[in-house]
Length: 196
Image (tube, rainbow, N blue to C red):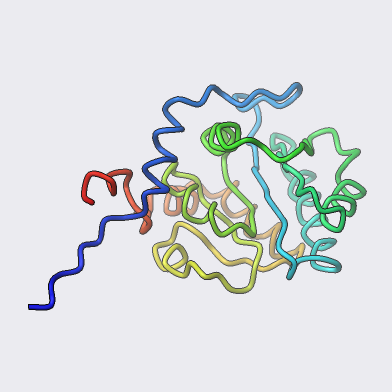
């Protein structure tokens, strides 16, 4: 007998849900999670530098302009190649909140309070669905195809028109939003440690 494989889930989800229970709400002057639909965005991947980063920033602006009840929370990567173009594009917008990178408890609280995520981060593709938050992935491929297959994440690329279209769908169509928000998270349910 070779043995058997037990699928336990990722212990990262266990840690995330524990933190979500304990983390105080994320507070940032001018940003109101109760009155605004907050889009949490993270951008850092080298493949998205340059022209793609400009497209991403323009896409964010288009969503903000189309939906006056939205706000963008964008923790900026420390690399000036990422930081400076996004500051130039979004820094003056009254509903774009560009911050320093968030501590993990702040990030979890922001995920908990936001409406949806736009990100090129691999980790957030696993974590956000555990909190019922759809993830629009700012990439053409992902090393986490399980999230796309499960319907918790959607690859949308970096073109501004695609960002506006896909974010608009989730902000306007409650059925499309709920389909992603309620999809089963393939990375775990918070009980991986128990199973192990």
